[in-house]
Image 1: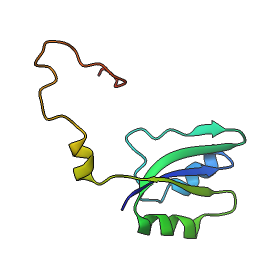
Image 2 (image 1 turned 135 degrees about the vertical axis):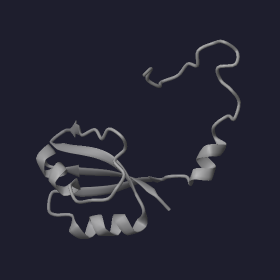
Image 3 (image 1 turned 90 degrees about the vertical axis):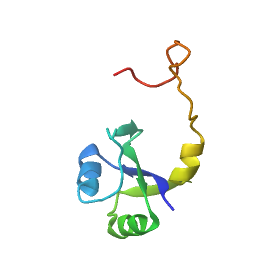
Length: 98
């Protein structure tokens, strides 16, 4: 089962170096956020990947499991199968227009 993680380090450079050789999913456009005196990012990993991350985490790196990510079938069931453009109205929401 995949889990959503928050990985943080003392600096952006330390976070980048730690994540350089990982295989976790950081999304299309990973974002590093400054939170107080630490820099963090969000990623998705399975149990084996989390174990490897924890094993190689150096001093100053913290890994926090935020939540379990639902499987693909569960996520697909959340989305309508209808044509959202059929009414002639533009869909609304927090997405970006490309």
